[in-house]
Structures are given as C-alpha cells and as structure tokens.
Amino acid sequence: MEQNVAAQIAEYQQSGNIVLRNEIVLKNMGLVRATAMSLRNMYLKYGDVDDVVNEGVIALMDAIELFDPTRGAKFETFASLKIRGAIIDYIRKQDWIPRQIRKFAKTLDKAYSSLYNLYNRTPTMEELAEHMGLSEEKLLKYMAESACSVTLSFEELLYEDNFSEPSDAAPADSRIMRDEMNSVIAEAIGQLKEKERQVITLYYYKNMKYSDIAKALGVSESRVCQINAKATLALKTALEPYIK
Image 1 (cartoon, rainbow, N blue to C red):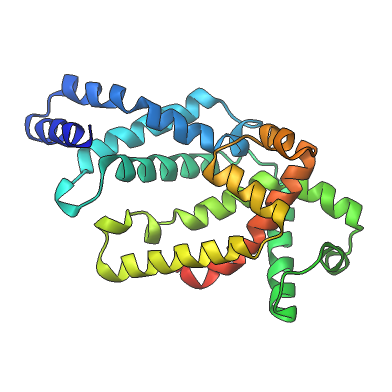
Image 2: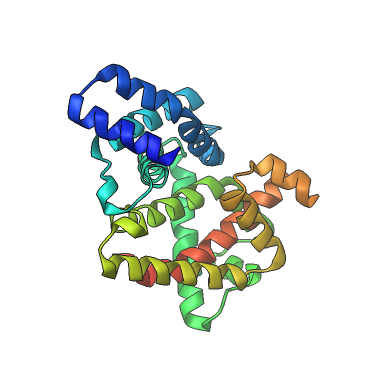
C-alpha cells in the first residue's frame, strides 16, 4: 500500500496531473479525519470540525507536493505530521480560547515551573493554589476551564519546526535528539500518578474524547480536564530542555 502511494506521488510530481493528486487526497482522507478527531478536545467548543478538516486537506496536498521517498520516511508519517502541525497552527491563529482562560493557563504554567524548580519535584495542588493565591476548589475549576489551552500549548511545543520532520528523514543529530526526547516523554509519563498516566495514554495514544475518557475512568469530564491539565504541565516541564 505504502509503495503504491509513493509510486502515485512520484508520478504526480512528474506529471502535475491534478486528477491523480485528487485521487491520492481521497485515498488519504481517513488520515486527515483521524488527525482532526485526535485534536477535537481543543477546538470542539470553539470551532467547526469541517473547517479543521479543510486545513488538514490543504496540509495533505502540501505533503503530496513535498514528499521525498529517498529520505526514508513513510508518506503516512510525513503527511500526518504535516496535517497535525497545520491544524495546531490553525487552532492557535483562531484564538478560540477566551483571553482570560489563556491568561490563566500561562500563569499556571509559570507557577508550576517555579515550584518545580524550587522543590525539584512535582508541586502539589495545595502548593500551586497557595502560590497562585487561590483556593484549591477555584484552582481545580480554572484548570478544567483552561485544559484545552494548556494542551494546545503542549501540542505546539511538540510540533514546532525543530521537531516537525519524521526521525528517519531528519539529520542524524536531529534523530538522536528526537529519540532522546521520546525517552524523556516515556520516563515523564512513567512518573505520573496512575490516573494521570491513564488520561495521557487515552488522550494522546488512543485519541479518545474527554467525555469517553470520563466514562472509562468513572469520573466527571471536568475531572478529566483537570487531570489532563496537570499531567500536561509535568510533561511540558520535562521537555523544556529539548525545545529551542
């Protein structure tokens, strides 16, 4: 299947046949929809799914134009990174998240980093609340509301230009850094609390919606948002040394 797609892309790049390109796009629409759905928790309340899918299609067409099989990457890997990066960029540019929530997310991020550096460990909710001058109840409420903003920030961090190419298509030093970053992510996930590991796994690796995760874990959707926000902050802190 992959060889067939690569051959079609090579033929299109040589001929410029738009009909052939559209055929390749149609064959890969499942990849666009799957990527759009995996990010739906970040935009569902603020934007239209069709608009996001359209951005993914544009990125897919761009991937068809730029794909180079001689670099060793599979087209599906190359295209999925292009699509995901384009959708994340589109979400950020729309600024669907209310300014107050975005501001809180940045304050929370800064507070988490400060306390982590101070204690050399993950800060507790009580410590975060005290540092931010909030009750734990309000902190949890605001964390649930800002979960999509925190998650978007983490997604942007993962898919910035310095990590936008597949590891098998990048220079050796970039591959080494990506491999090291993946090890750091795995270690950071392993250090999370059980519920946090479950939420991160179900959200990022199983592409489940918050509502479905809530049902699977037997908690409220708001609680899932809170857990995801706190776990994401921990992962962001672990990845900071690897981002330009």
